[in-house]
Length: 88
Image 1 (cartoon, one colour):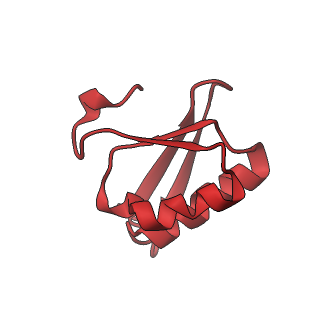
Image 2 (cartoon, helix red, strand yellow):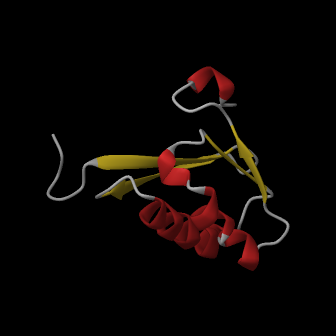
Image 3 (tube, one colour):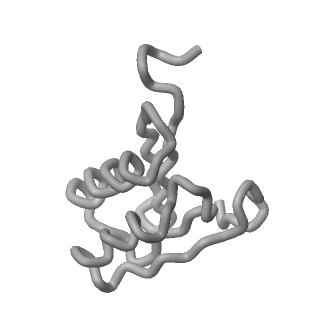
């Protein structure tokens, strides 16, 4: 059951440093996902590769803005709603 206004959970998995972060989201929109990623990057450092499932909440326009702060960040996408194409 959702807690208050939060209805979704974003999972951030860092394969290199071996940790996982679960972040509550009110909406599955690119701006909110980018805000959570920015918070994670500022706390733990940006990864060299950011992989997503290419869903609408990972709008390339919004997420690509993160590359302005971290130009070495490589964006990799899998097929939407196809967990087998993800590395986890």
